[in-house]
Image (cartoon, one colour):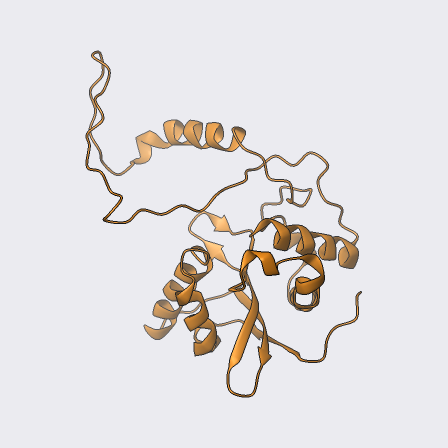
Amino acid sequence: MPALTTDLNVLVCQKARDVPDFVLESLQLHEVNANVILPTLIKCCEKENSGGVIKDHLWIVVYKNTGDSFEVKVVVSCTDGLIGKYPIFLFSPLPSDSHQDRLMLPSLTLAARELFLNVSPRRVYSVFGPEVLSRTFAGIWTTNTNIQLAQDPYYYSCKISYLTLGTLIEKELPLASDQTGYLRPAVQTDVEGVARLNFLFAADAVCRFCLPQRIHL
């Protein structure tokens, strides 16, 4: 394991309300890039504040104490969603040109070590985040666990985009002359159609940094 710098601190939170305010503020300031970690954290906080119990959730924060403030380096989440256990998500408020391996390696090494100490290696079946962070983190995880990266991973790459009131164009797209349709939430009878669409979506993209097994726990 590479040597760790002594000016970094690491915090492991198993409850959403234990995540410090300075971390939440950092996520909110970069809500587009934190568009998976932040909503899940907020929902978990709301559930805990209403008396609910959150289990098997983990947030790891690597930060630097500058004396006057706290500088977040990396946030790693290991959480569940409505459809099962999420992949590991990575977030950094630092600009993408600061994600070079040699700059982020100490922070990601600390985060990977804490993740290894707190969850089973089988829980880490896939890693999502900015490309350099994902690649570096996956390499560290392989070194720590001897779990090799998939040689031909089958998942998807994605790109963040967003819509504002200024770019929204209200336009109804016409259906083919022999079709009719309207918008509504999916129901149980739509399961096969939704499954087919999801399969086509996943088949049309590739992720290079997934770990080998598709483990469903």
